Amino acid sequence: MARRLVVYLKDAWTKEPVWVSPFTIGGLAIILPAVSPFTKYATMINQAMPYNYPAYGPHEIGKEYYLPMK
Image (cartoon, rainbow, N blue to C red; front, top):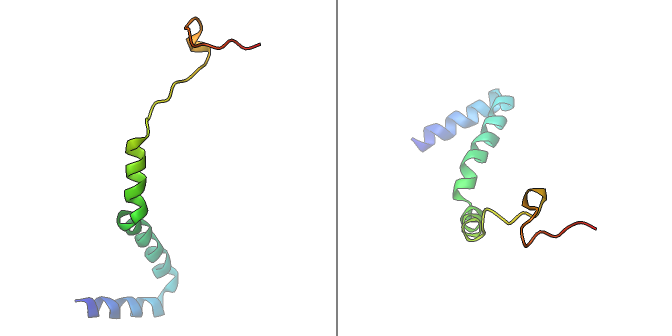
């Protein structure tokens, strides 16, 4: 099965490299993030960091932690 796929890809590359190269790049763009070790560590960091941060702005006027502008 793998041999047939290799033969098919070689044949397609010799006939139409303009079509094969974007499909190859697109396929790698879909597959590589799933198997990348960076994805694991990025997920761990995103889970450890808070999603919502305190915001100091005009909607918090009158609260004790509001810092008025000079």
